[in-house]
Image (cartoon, rainbow, N blue to C red; front, top):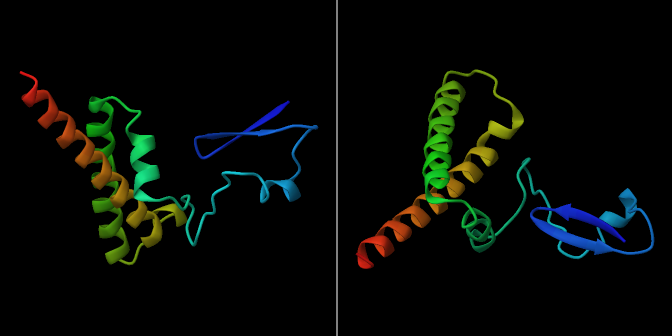
Length: 115
């Protein structure tokens, strides 16, 4: 039995190794759109981020915001940035930060209700 991990999903494929031509037919396979980040819904992103502890979500959101700010300054100055930090990637990082911040806020509100 062969297991292939694709974007946080284990895809089971029996009968030997998976070849490149087979990958597009595997269930759960996600595309990459125009950027280097996977195409996923906010719900899928939320489900993945919800696995992290609150302190990690806080750090992830803060780090994403910092990368976004610095990279946008560099882009505005006409500097080259890696493909993953060009606008589609920055939009993806921004969505990820928003989802992480929303999860943190929800967890903090739930903790206050339980006091």
